[in-house]
Length: 173
Length: 307
Image: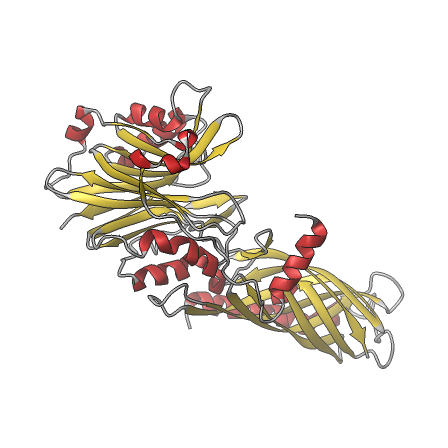
């Protein structure tokens, strides 16, 4: 594993660690102690921008201790270039901005796998497929009560650090 | 394009399969000698001047076959003096024999074309080849500055993706006395994804002579463009267009001496490798990227030894 990859893995692990310890460290004050509804554990959504690049479809499930585990995936073609992304993540809900359990702040962290295939313009070259593994950290607002809405800012770290935005709409069951 | 049509185009291109959103570029025109390029019209007529005799003496290839070549996007060069000062401020650039410049402009209201002014300040000969007219009675194009005679200059209108301005490539032979260096100077469109960028580049390099130096601003950015309008930012090396263009050029037998040059451009604090140099049939030594000058790009140079 290269030095860069080790540093990236360390950051992801640290973020995950933050997610695991965050709710405990914050104590009970201000925590959403229960989902909005007892059957709101599963979220299905589509994203604009965000962890999937241009767009994504995602799923996550709430775990105990204000955690959630999920993933976003996307595949799209832009002017012949084919992009595929898979971004699993661990989410933590460290506090609620208001008393209602429907509104929450969240943080998500995880790796992002990216594959791009560029086709050849002619017979002189076979085309090229490139892959990379990056790290992502996002933080934002969530509304969850049957309807799921998220808006967030994120940072993606691969060969460089890039700020980005995302918004999700879906439903929770 | 209206917001509604933009959204429709983005959605159509982004969906799985992306049918109908592949490489749709108009055909390239053939190489046309600039002395005969009436097809481009009088407004896009090329201009040139020979180098001073002193320039040839002071920049003569060491050992008879070594010449330093610089590529530099001068970002319209509104102040030619600043461009010349930048070049003279960097010892590595000061003695270069050939400069391939992009984004040069010329205006009828100005006494000199900006290329002519930079060339005059450096004591070099030049050829300026416009690609298009711009507002204010001007033109925008490519130029070559050289301490040696520039011969057989030709221009090619590159395939148009319809996502920016008309783009050209220019090729010429630099007469080094016993040797001739064939160069191709390029400035590719900005808002292209990699497959389109290769289709845009291909006609200029596919049938290049066996001994050729290709250089310019290839605009190999890290952005994924949606319908040529909306940028999707990416931190992923898989989104780096420069790596794919390098791969394509290697398949054509070119070396990629600037593949590890690092960034050549900085905008809004984001640095990217937008400029590249490729050689075939030549012994080349990468020099460096000099972080000087008023442009958003930095000049990059290599040393070329002719066979």
